[in-house]
Amino acid sequence: MTRTRWILVGIAGLVLVLASLLFRGDLPAAEVDAKYSNDASRFLPMENGARVHYRDEGKAEGAAVVLIHGAMASLHTWEPWVAILGQRYRVISLDLPAHGLTGQVPEGAYGADAFTETIDAVVNELGVERFVLGGNSMGGGATWRYALTHPQRVRAMILVDSVAPGDWRESATAAATKDDADAERSAPVGFALLRQSWFRAIARYLDPALLVEQGLLSAYNNSPVVNQALIDRYYELILREGTRAAILNRSNSYSRNGTSNDVSTLSQPTLVMWGAQDSLIPVSVADQFAQRLPNTQVVIYDDLGHIPMEEDPQRSAADVLNFLDQLPVINN
Image (cartoon, rainbow, N blue to C red; front, side, top):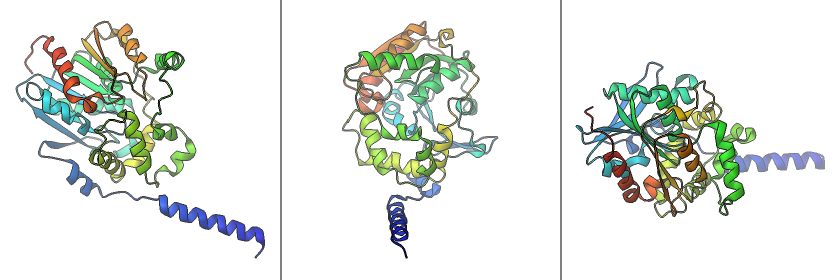
């Protein structure tokens, strides 16, 4: 065997060893479902074959508040708020397609329209006609998109470090990068890698442990709430059978939708909440929402990151309660 051939064999062997070390198979869906569901968990069969995990908690006769999680997250992110808001309000949370215990869905329906349809299906199943709708990050985008599609059903919005409409998000981010002295904060590496085609080609088979931990520490602004239980929750839900493939599919489809993104048409009272230390979406985007939404209150947390409702549940929930108390009383 020639020297070149030996080198090639050695390289191939090294690749196989690295692949075996980095490979991580899926976890059985039933095992993950058993660990991360509770007595409040319900599963809604959809016409397209999907099965949506949701919870209907809190004060049953209270006005309804529907909460939507962000990318890579799940309805579990709202548990601290559910415990507080649920004393006075009916709190509904759900796992969007490609997330949580909803996970992979038939036909790869992971775009913005699928998110709107999923939210609509859950509130229809529960017979809730009008409600406050809130979301964090990607879930904030799902919130204002739903409100644009069904404005008559949304009493008010709560946007927590929300993604913005694409037609002005880039200019806001560019301005923040230019002016913000803290713009160099380390963002989650996983989101940057998912934008790379070479990484998407192999990500289905890789162990995401290091990316999960780095991403959480970054998103949560190194908060002490990032403990082993929280890391395990994200890690195991991502490894739930079919979810990694769904995440890769979703990353290529979410932004494609035909809905108008002119949020200035939304007149609902809106609470915009932001962690100034957000490493994913700059705090300047909160000002952009305030300028474009005609009926807005803004709360900025100087010491928090991208997930205020978990980083400081008591303070953030108190601001939500103050906002909700200002709304006209309705009966669901």
